[in-house]
Amino acid sequence: MSKLLTVYAVGGGMLGLTLILTVFAQCFWQTSQGDRFDWNSVKATSTFRWQGCYKHYQCTRLKVPMNYTNPSSGWAGLAIIRVPSLFPTTSPSYQGPLIINPGGPGGSGVSLVLRSGFHFSTILDGRFDIIGLDPRGIGRSTPQVKFFGTYSEQALWLDGEYPDALNSSTEVLPRSIARAQLMGHLAEDQDDGTLRHVTTENIARDMLSIARANGNDKLQYWGFSWGTILGVVFATLFPDHVGRMVLDGVIDAEDYYATLWSNNLLDTNKTLQHFFQACVDAGPTGCAFYAPNATEIASNLDRLYDMVKAQPVPVYQARTYGLVDYSLLRRAVFTALYSPFTMFEPLAQGLADLKAGNGDTIYSLVNRPRFECADAEDFQYSNQYESGTALHCLDGDEVHDSPAELRRFYEKMTEYTTLAELWAVVRIRCSGWRVRTKRTLPTKFGGRTSSPLLLVSNTADPVAPLWAAHKTSKWFPGSVVLMQDAPGHCSVSAVSSCTQSNIREYLLNGNLPNANATVCAVDEGLFKGNKRRADTEAPSQQLPLVTHDTYLNDIRRLRDSFPLALPT
Image (cartoon, rainbow, N blue to C red; front, side):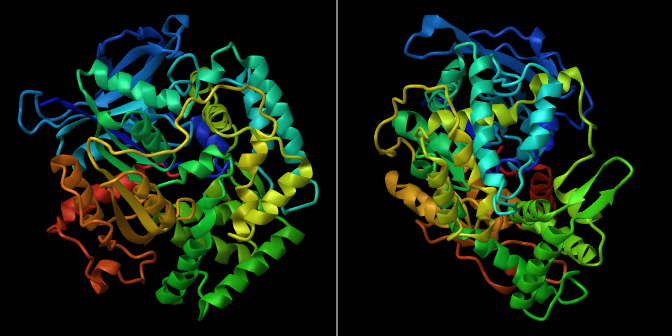
């Protein structure tokens, strides 16, 4: 029986919106351990040569072809990190490598392991080597995608890229289109000829190379958000090399490859309604922005939008300063929809404070201290904006829309949600893209995989609607959709012993839940005054739940460490 390689790619990311925490993206790689590690000292080799790094981890680089159709034309060096299993490889309890990647596109799997690797290991009983990969072009992998020659140049561009909502003034859409043209020139001028090879298809091929370097025939993968697209591409290209594959927070791959990113927003308003209703249910002592009904809360929020649009609120704190204007308030609300179980309460408090003229809390939801994060090493690894942009523009169909057509595209997206003005910029950005590549993917996604897939989606995901999971499941016979009855992006945005028990059972033993019929409740409320769903409604499931406090705390720590963010 062949050994299995398990890959866990988490996103959090399609995530998301462009612009949401651009400075966060710059500094995300920093670790709480406080150690530095010189990745330049790690030579890329065709086999794994692990060495100690960051105190408690092991690191290596894998040498893979830059161009798989012409392997001798150049090489990429993939940066890889792991938390070793608690069990020796000879133990029957050892489950093999489990690679994690935070989606994005453009996120760093190395950074994710440094933040969350031990939490992943704990909830899976230490049976896996928890491995993080920086995909080609990203973070510590080489060559790295760069649009800028210096940190200062990057910081100045990103400061202007932190977007105004497209409907905040008549100038924003034309300016966004013009900036897309500039960005296209920047990317082209910095390209050394390797940029066209930074595609999801090639990243999928890299994952097969990783599996083979470990002596495995099959790859097991758990992908969140954009990571689900990577999983779909891998399963389409290599159906006979699929081990246990979890796709969590499923994105419509067809929509992504059409450079539309429009179907993402089908459940955005539904997620926002959860905030309104949960605030009502929490009562005046549980929700700071309370009103007697959801309609009144929505109206109060609209009045705040009008208030800051007419007169932004200044914020001056010890380590930062800025304005709470219409665009920032819209971003704060959208950001909270990603992680409602941790962000709805501070959002409500921030809205109540803003109503009273204090913008500190709202400002802190989407901004970090200015100029806090900048040294040479930070800049060396901070490229999520560049790599994410390159990936979705190179992957997708070319965008030749006129300004009028881009405006109509945005107006069409507003039919899904009023927050579309923060999302349509993804397609707009690719309207200026100049570097091209040859796509060799099959014309249709899907296939009969050697192992069935498990797809996991929340019932109200702001950027990954449940509909997309059911659509994707139809492409892969035998796959199953596991539903988590909660708002938020991906299953890790909530604490659910039911969900994690089903995922554990699948990863550890290969057993799927009931076909498209399992709905898992969550174990916490959105506000302290809310009842937990698990208290009021028994989940539809086939497994005995692991509900002891220690296990729930393990899931909670994973949720709190997991970086859910909008796309760069």
